[in-house]
Figure 1: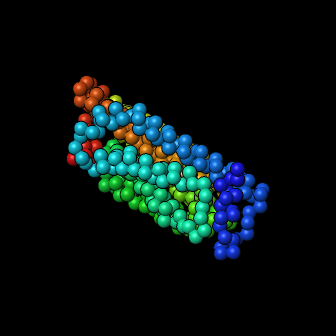
Figure 2: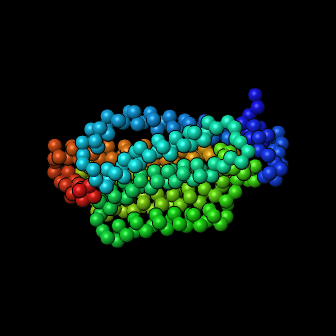
Figure 3: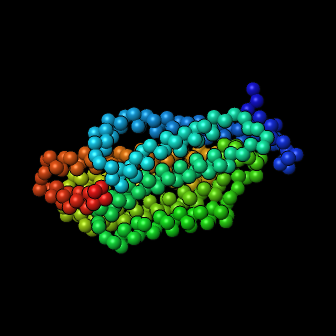
Length: 301
């Protein structure tokens, strides 16, 4: 049976798009990368569904009975929107043939936009908690301005430099591949998480060095794990964007969104559990939890 890439090669009219047919060697390595990317993205979708199933009880216990607030709205976006974003990637991954004149540009743009919104929502949950740990107007201004600078800078660099797919014949943008320009976006995300990690450690040892309760300990420990996971995934994405053939880059399409959604949700569940423990079993060690919880509650009022 001919591969999807060979079907793609013969179905697109080369005289219309002025493209030369791919050789068998090129088609083989493109096909291997595309199929590998499809399997990986479908696998990450399965991980998202599995994690949702095993954490549904925690969500019903710590989220569903609470009133709708800004934090809950952002959580809902980071929790449920990935199913639509990765679902669109899932649909693209199962495409096996492409038709002359077909364009997938709008579909791809919508999918990318959903991915970005999911990541921003997950980062928003972390931003609220960081500000709650040290209510400073300067800190809030930094947390709002710095990500904007990272996003704008990465977009400008991606448009200026590496906006290409190594000249693969893909006139309708339907082939399951991505360009190397995403390396700047992953680099900006890595830088953002690194700065937040340094800021988190500074707050932890500057303000809460002497007294720390279970709620604060849960927050700091889970947040550090979250940032390390995101930085590790970003480093993996950067390597895949620069080193292997371009057909393998699409492997990173769903990885970031799954990690953001899964880890951000678990942080919130753990914090809710720690809050409940602090209310029902107060100790002298957890007196500072009251101030932390009151600061966080201002965003949930």
